Length: 300
Image 1 (tube, rainbow, N blue to C red):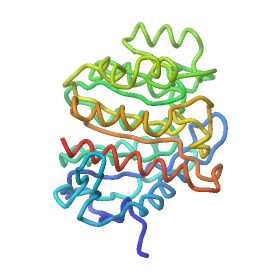
Image 2: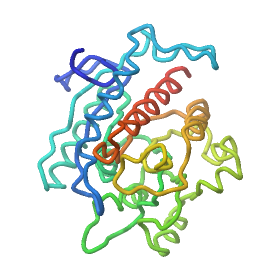
Image 3: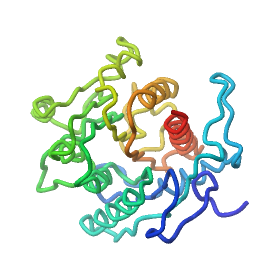
């Protein structure tokens, strides 16, 4: 019952007077897609799925860790959605950037639910003037295209745009596999600009703890999760599925370990397109990943 805000937390319409630890922001924009659209419905579907985990202010007890996560000492609010102007990438991105800036100005951790991966571009833009940080991207695709047919702000461009920022100290790109959105020269350019690119098979050979140890310790970190990083056998509801992806506990292990050794300054989760998954399991996975990640961050 009730309005399905994220985790059934309080909706805040006054963005000038935010007081919380975490602010959820919806970015229902998918005009940057190259293949199947539908991620504009991602924020609504993830919010609705998150109500499954709305256990109230007592938090959630994990018997494996013998720990209560996201208890009454952690305040989560839902800012609703950034205003999206259909087909207008520039205006829609500007509005997403504004929403993220409002959270940052209030000293609140912004957690943005997309939308396609192009929404990462305004999210990173919002950190202009902030201290430098590293980006952890968990994704099937490199998203390092500079320009294609004049397009520079689609969902194949965000990590290239991020790498150009003087306040982005480097990128770790995990899960990249199969035929990607980026041509060979894009991979070469990514490595020249400081990217550490690790496929799913490489990550499994190394072990998830060793993967995390490659990320600069104690550095400020922004986490961007594309749901297609997961195998479509467990996350079919996405526009560009790629088989051979991560499984749930592999990503969970990465997020748990990285939260213990780095300061997380922002999170986005993108590319949930619920219409391709009648079971709703993709949105449930997305909500569960976000809630676990937030629990790990604030447990530290």
